[in-house]
Length: 134
Image 1 (cartoon, rainbow, N blue to C red):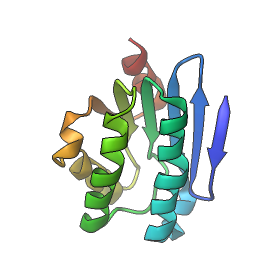
Image 2: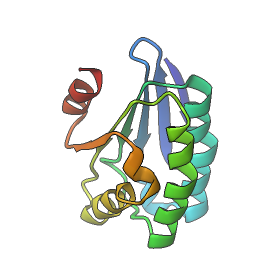
Image 3: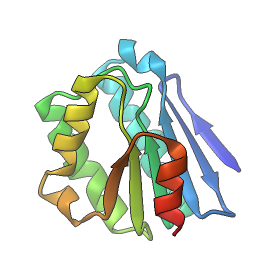
Image 4: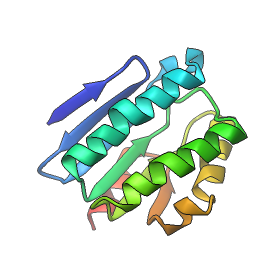
């Protein structure tokens, strides 16, 4: 398994499962937008480009920083096209325990660019993997 990390995100690629696992960490509570943006661009999107996974599992369970509306737009405009132009077939998102983060994530997935993605929200990793791999 290949692993990439910052203080705010850990990204692991399983070649066997053809899945990129991204896990946002509790430390996001103290993250600036630049920290989050850098984690998206330098870690998450680079791993998507490098490994061309079939599946993404984005675990936001411990994320403690909701996105502003402007940040949501930036993420939609900058990450969705990379994912859409990759080999990703399905995206599972584990919802945050923080209700504001959950609402921001759900709102982002309703943005115009993200509507083309095949994604679903889950409460835990095992149900997300069951959906992804079946």
